[in-house]
Length: 282
Image 1 (cartoon, rainbow, N blue to C red):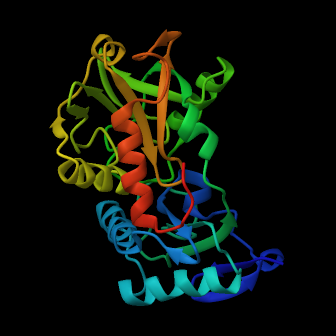
Image 2 (cartoon, rainbow, N blue to C red; image 1 turned 180 degrees about the vertical axis):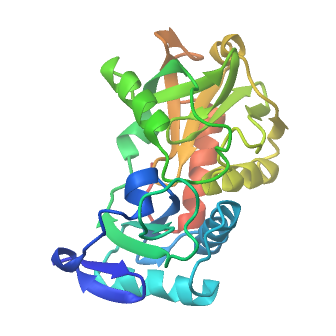
């Protein structure tokens, strides 16, 4: 049976009990992170943990232990569940209190973390995926990795209903990000992506990709693309912790480039993969 981290205790899954008045359950009053596991190791763990604490600070939730302790708890959870390739999901809520919108005068934050095995989406990384433009109707603090994901869920479902893998979100004509990913276009030797403002989540994989662009001498322009500009890109791709780098070869029925994985997207994939040192080629 799976081990789950509940606050500072490791318990069996069937032992987990969450109060009906937990503010995460009632208000989405909390934040979360997903950390990828490769070969039993937490990939970019420091960056994910730092962002977890940053999101918690933005919503005024105090994480009840230091980053070093948090890091060890995540590794202990991976080891207890014998996860080789997968992910850790961890969230913290403001805790349980009688239902009211304002913060309670006192409450104890609740941490829950669990693991699962996740395989790399190799076929999608090679062959690409279809996407759909969907209006970005979310709140204006997308830089916080909060539990309030209903807007993301609705966008993802709409894309899925149209037979697409991902939603390309836009505010008016300007593309922001995906429902669960960051978005990029490549034209000639320049990569375009939305700047890390309050309108997107500054993905950890996004940060890695921008660093790889410097290594590969690919110019980066952190400026919003319009929908029309996106359709004129030579290449287009998305990234996330679990998806890594997936080419988007079609948006709203329009082929991007020649409708296959682009050369520079493949170079970025291979450079990303080299950092993983898995011995698996895509």
